[in-house]
Length: 280
Image (cartoon, rainbow, N blue to C red; front, side):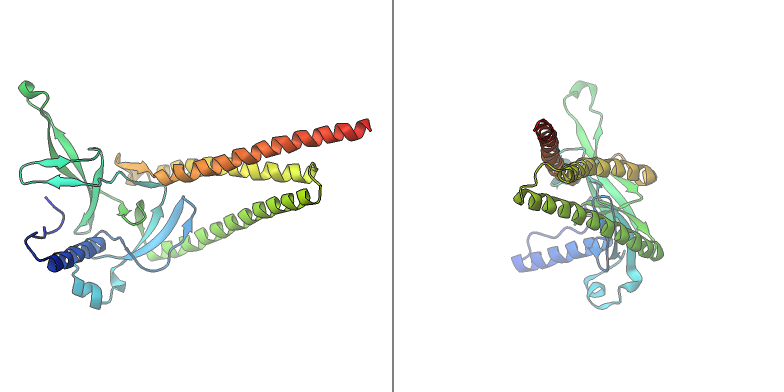
């Protein structure tokens, strides 16, 4: 059955949209997906967040009451998400689906999180090609951000504040290293403009840039696997690695390969230049 009350389609267009928005807002609050307050993200590895959450909330509560007491704090896992069903048709007697039957829906009811999935019922022997399906609600320990499409683990406010500082320091360190690589590339371009191409410094710069770009995506992937080990008790078979890990990784890898080819070319050019200078 549906998570929330079904809105009759016999209502006027304006009334229907108003109730639809109300139900959507209340569901967002129940799921703990209404973010409010500070958050810190460290690449595609870890992050923090806080939200307003309630079990028996209403629009009047949301608009007028003090929500501080209903705030929850999370550590976010951007690399991990759920295989969310995009479309589901339900009738009183059957379930019809139009997407992968392994996908799930996430919702929270009375403080307990669930994933709703489609399970199969063994078909009778005389009708082996007829398969029936039913819905199963499986309780889970994690929360899921519909907006960021990632898993969230509930933590205390004090833990979140400590993680904010830690992730902030790590993020600043990462930014400083990126600026260091950018400076190395700009110095490389400046040397080329001066005719100083095949130098030890330029070869070293290209090597550092290429190795950094090649190692980074593999490091992110391996660290995400390590994060899964740390939060192993929260993970279920419905949790999958997010596509954004791959979409950002291949771009970095391509850039790394390009710089690595430049590094090899300039290294060979430097050797040829040294041989030429020695011959002269």
